[in-house]
Image (tube, rainbow, N blue to C red; front, side, top):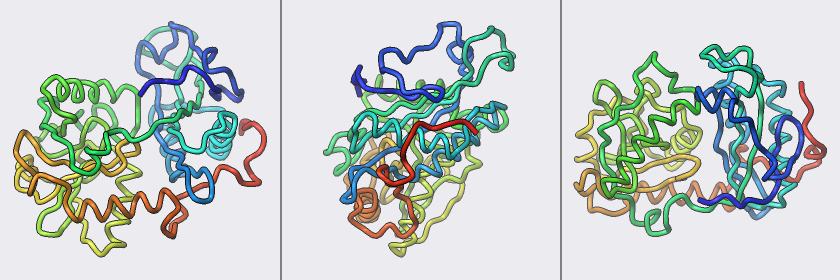
Amino acid sequence: MAFPGTGTIWMNGKLVDWNKATIHVASHVVHYGSGVFEGARCYDTVRGPACFRLDAHMRRLLDSARIYRMEPAYSQEALTQAVYDVIEANKFRACYIRPIIYRGYDSLGVNPLPCPVDVAIMVWEWGAYFTKEAIEEGLDVKVSTWARNAPNTTPAMAKSSANYANAQLIKLEALADGYAEAIALDTYGNLSEGSGQNVFVVRNGIIYTPPIGNSVLWGITRDSVIDIAHDLGFEVREQTLPRETLYIADEVFFVGTAVEVTPIRSVDRVKVGPGRRGPITEAIQQRFFQIVKGEAPDTRGWLQYVHTPATSGAAKGR
C-alpha cells in the first residue's frame, strides 16, 4: 500500500493538505509510541459510501485512549463527524480510515503528561489487503517464534501504537521465512492472533476462536464474524486453543478490518484440510462481503452512510 501524497487530512479540528499534515520530530509519540489508533473501512455500496461499524471503531479508539490516560478534546460524535467530513473532502466512495490520538510536542521523558493530546484522521483508497487468489485459495502462514505480549504488560485491548512493535516482529519474521503471515502464541503457548488479525479455526463443523484473555485484540470484525456465523446456523466457541489445533483443523481463517475474511491453506507447511478455502469460511466470507457492499440486509445497522443530512460542517470539540 502506497500513500497517494495528495488529498486532505483532518488534524485537530481542521482539514489540511496531505503534505502539510506533519508533526515535530520531538513529539512524544515518535520516541515512546504514545498513541492509539483505529483502522476502519468505508465501502462503496449500492446506496453510496458507507462506513462499516464506525461507531464501534470510534468507541474503541476512545477506550484505548482512556486506558493510556489520554483525554482528547473531541467527543465520539465529533470524531465520527470528522471522519465523514474528511471522506467527503477527498471525494472517496471507498477508502481505509485511520484515526489516531497521540501525545504531541512539548517535552521528552517517560512521563507523557506535559505533552498535548493531538488527533488526526487519514483516509486513502486501499483495496484488498491480500491478492484475489489469496482471498479465494488461502494463505501460507507459520507459527511465529515471537509470542504476543503477556497479560498485564501492555494492554492487548488497547489498539496502541506501542503494541505494533510486537506485530512488526511477527510480520517481518513471516516474510523473511517465505510466508504471507504468521500466527502468534500467547506466553502460555496457546493460540493468540496474527500480526494484525484475529484467527478462527473450524473442526467438525464447529468454529473456534481464542478468547480475549489470550492476548488478542477485541476485534470488531471478529465480533461481526461471530454474529454472521450464528446467523448462518454455525456454532461458535470462544475457548483457549493449543498450537496443534492448527494442524488438525478442517479450516482456518483470518479476520480483520484490513484482511476482511481471508482463508489459510497451510500452517508451517502443513495443509489445512484439503489445502484450500473451506465451505464454512467461504459462506462467512460471502455473507460478510454481501453486507458491507449493501447487497444483503443490514439487520444490525453496521453500515453508517457518509452522505446523510447530519454530515455537514467540520467537527467541533465537546
